[in-house]
Length: 212
Image (cartoon, rainbow, N blue to C red; front, side, top):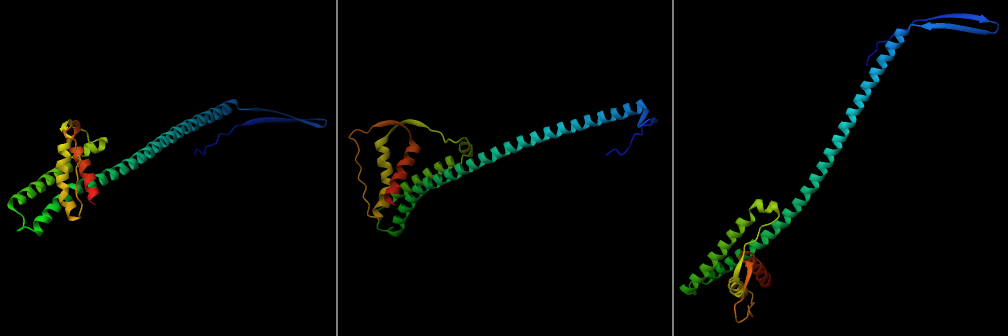
């Protein structure tokens, strides 16, 4: 800090009057005014520094608050990501398991299966693997993941036909475990408005869980 000092000269005269001592003095006024001015300037600088400190403190508090909110949002997004990836793994497991079941049948009894059946099995394996690739491409679309929605592509489709097709894929896995598929469908195939791929995912998951 500033260690300089200001000297103020005071002239005084002491007069004794009976039991009292009277002192008359005068000071150099310009010295007192100079000292007072310096004190005023010093106080102004202190006030300025205090205001700056308060401003910096408020800015730090605001930044800390935003950082805390960002961390909370990041934690929520991380939980959603983990939940989503768990669902993705489950959805991918079903068609791949179906393809493996048909491949196992062909491998274990290759010469006992007719060429026609082999072509049928290979067609199922190819379809299930292509379905898995389409599903994987959609699940790996991170822009959709970040938006929180994979989107829907609704259209008018034959629901009963989709059920039959999906059941066919899982029948082979059911036979290995002694499970028989029985379909009860209306006489007239109804058409509904739905997303074909999403509905197939749901039906495939349900049938796959049933076979387990």
